[in-house]
Length: 234
Ligand SMILES: [Zn+2]
Image (cartoon, rainbow, N blue to C red):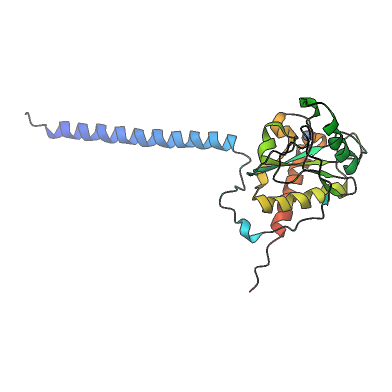
């Protein structure tokens, strides 16, 4: 084999260095691109469920008026759910009506024919005065949020007028109820969602039309939850 001259060796070494340098630059560019793409798609992921220490917090259970629906094919199918991954907020779309009236509407579905239109319910309904009515046990499915019925807790909120904005009392009860559920099921802030986020329906109307109000509501729930630090004693 012919011996390489020093000049040739240097040339080869230089070429190798150039190739390695370009590879490093290419990798750096690629990682920047990947970071940009993931940050665009994950703008919401700030407080992740993983790594958050739920054992330090415990919002107490607010007063809940249990008025469970009769088990029936339409509004309370009795389907067991065990893996809760979120809370879905709704509005009743029926201004001025109260929690019990809406609960009774769900109950009345039991006498109707077995059809998609009659399948409507919710785990909770919060009244205009902040009364929390529970219609369905937390280990059973409600018909409220389409594809997410199987792994979420649904909360319907009453509202005084057409804007769909919640009264102060409803708002406060929603914050307390959701804060309690966050601790109970280890739900993170970004898993508190609107019906709109599941199906695109304008529900809860005011909080779809006013993104700032929705972000504030979600912040208020999370801040409330974080304010309920467990007293771990000495
Ligand atoms: Zn809804």
